[in-house]
Length: 291
Image 1: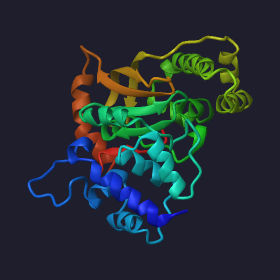
Image 2 (image 1 turned 60 degrees about the vertical axis):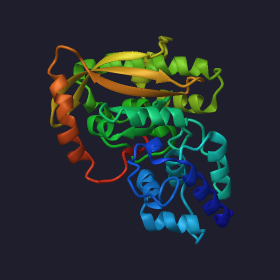
Image 3 (image 1 turned 90 degrees about the vertical axis):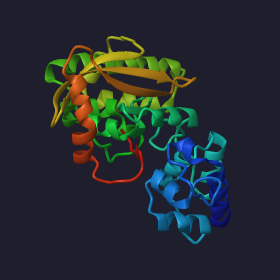
Image 4 (image 1 turned 120 degrees about the horizontal axis):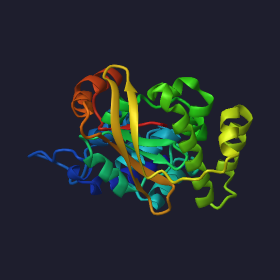
């Protein structure tokens, strides 16, 4: 652990990021070439005092989640992210987990979708980062970590997670999730320990999963037409579209209202109703989480 070097590295990365790169106004009078410390804190979901302590190397020991948030806020490359973890004396996050690296270009694209619910998830349905409208539409992230934070995992182990979809659509979603998982397993080479552990756990805990898995259906989910049950806005019909990373292990999802439905007006209300109810915190535009 080298906290002094950690602070110097954070400052050097902060200096190179322009406000416009992360969607912040430049303002007429800026005394620094890059981001201010309060802006980095805002983007990472940290207090300003805590971030100042980090840059000073004054003893703060950031968690894995905070390091991941800082890496995303500062648009670090994978090598830079790894260096940040090394300086903090933390092991690198497991691939596919909630603290996994997100490509800066994908983060920038997510930021530009500020008027559309959007999130970045892994191929195992672990949410890495989402914007406020996605959190308002889909709910807050779970408190679990690792692949148990996967929405696919919770679908078969936590009945409450299914409330987001109408009951009559559940069987279709279950089949689709399992088919997508089999495609992910093949894409990872068939011997991936994370996928193997996930499949073994679900097989032991869910007869429904075991039944679907035995069918050997496979399908790469590129787009969907979904019905989502929102606690205040009611039933919404949306198109769920995907943009995939080069290796297929991450995807950017965004949701648009189905043409010809009242979901167009409902999604416009989401920015007012949903975010106020679910996200009372003010500040950063991206909400880090596990879903």
